[in-house]
Image 1 (cartoon, rainbow, N blue to C red):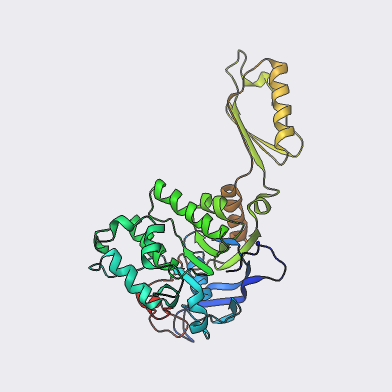
Image 2: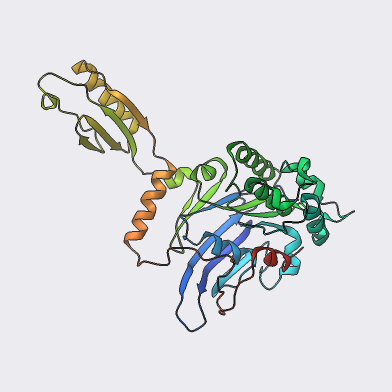
Length: 359
C-alpha cells in the first residue's frame, strides 16, 4: 500500500466537484440536501466532515461511496467513478455506515465471516485482513459467539467498523464512527483510526463530535444546509476567531463604579454585574494588561479563566454566519432507510446498500 505523506501535490485520492443530491420525486416537490459540494482528500490524509444533524454529511458521504446517485456533479475515488465503476473500486475501499443493520440472529463470528466471503481481499489466501483479524482489532474477539441482537449499541458500532476493515482497504469511509461508544471504547477507536492513518490508509469520516475532529483530523470541512462553508486544518479554521478571558470582580466598598475595567487593544469587553468577559484576538497581550491592572489596584480576579479560541466556538460562529446568508432548508439530512433518491424510488436500507456494493 502507498504510504506517501498527506499533502503530496496532485495526489488526491478523493475528488468531488459541484456535487448535488435532491430528495423527492423527479420533477415534483423536493429539496436539495447537498448543494454544490467541492472537496479533495489527499493520499494518507484523515479528513473530517463536520456539521449539525441535517447538514448533509451522510448524504454527501453516500454519494462519494457510490451508494447513491448524484443529481449533478463529479466524484472520483482512486480515479474511479464510484457509481459507474463500483466493481473495480469496491475491493479497495471500506465503508462503515451509521447503522450496519446486520441480522440479529447471526453471531458476531458468523457476521464477520459472512462479510469476509463477500470481500475479495479478505478471502483465504488473498493476503488481506481476515474476519478474525478485524474482530480482534475492534476488541470483539471475545464476543465471537454472541448474537448481534445481544450486543450493546457500542458493540454493534464496533462490528460495523470490523466489517469496514475487511481486506485492508486503501480508503476508509467512517460515518459517525464513535456514536454510541462509551469513553473507553471511543478512545480505543480513535487509537485504531490513528494507527490505520499512520499505516497509510486514507480516511474520510463524518462526525458531530468536535473533539473527535480535533483529535484525529489532518483537515476538516464544516457543512451547513448542504454546503461546505469552510475547509482547512483545525488551526486554519480557528484562525482569527477571538479567544476569551473571563473573571469576577471582588466585592468592594463603594461598589463597582470605583473600578474601571481596561479594554485591551483588539478586544471586546462585556460586563454583567461583577462578571467580566473579554474577547480578544491577542490573548497573551490582553491577559498581561488585565493582570497588571489587577496588581495595580491590588485586587484578585475571581474565577479567572483564559482560553484560546476553540473549534466549538468557530463551528458555532461559522454556522451562524452561514445561516444569516441562506434561506431555510430541510431541518434534517434524510439519508437513510425510507428516504427517496433523485428518481423518487425508495432507497435501500443499510444492509442492502452494502450487499449491493460488496467487494
